[in-house]
Amino acid sequence: MDAPLRGKNIALLIGTSSGVEESAVHRAALELGARVAEVMFTEPAGSASSDHDLRTLARMLGRLYDAIDCGTMPSEAALRIEREAGVPVYQGLGTDDHPARALADLMALCEQRVPATSRASILFLGDPWTLRGRAFLSAAREIGFEVQMGSPFQAASNDAPFVVDATNAAHWSLTTPSGQLDQAGLSANHRLVMQAVLLDTIVDS
Image (cartoon, rainbow, N blue to C red; front, side):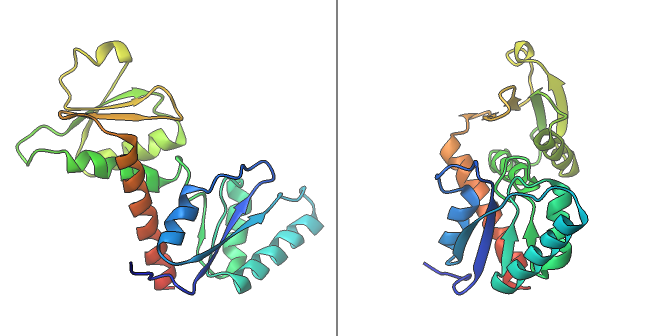
C-alpha cells in the first residue's frame, strides 16, 4: 500500500479523560504511513503565564511535528495553537462535529443518488442546531439537496428519498431508497475524507 505520509509526524492532543481506544483520525493517519503521537494535554487556567505556556507549547509542537490535531480542545485554545505552531492544525478532525464528517455523510448519500432526473430531497429528523447538524445541512443545501425538517412520526408518510435520522445525536442513521446505510460504510467514507484533508494540508505544506 502507498504511504504518502511516510516520514511525517502528527500530534494528537488528548485530554486526561480520553480512553485507550485508537481514534478515527489516528487510524486514518497510520494508514497513510504517518507516525502518530498522542500528547496528553490539559489547557492551563487563564492567566498571562498560562497564555505564554500555550504559545511555548504550540511552538515546540510545531518544531517536532508536521501537523497537530487539537481533538476536543476549546476552539479558542486551538486557534492560539494554530497561530503559533507554524504547521497545519486541525480542530478535532476526527470528531462528529467537524465538517469532514458532514462531507462524508453527504458523499454516502450522493453515491446512492439516481441520476439527474431524480429528486434530491432529504428529510432531516432531530436537532438541526447542533454543530454537526448545522454543518451537514449547510453543506447539503450548498450541493443542491432540498432539505425538509420533520419528526420521526412523519418519516413513514414523507416521500423524500433520503432520510437522515439525527434524533440520537451520537449515532445518526442515513436511509436511501435502497435502505439504511451500514455504519461500516459510513466510517469508511469518513476515513477517506479525513485522509484527503491530511494529504492536502501536510503533503503540500
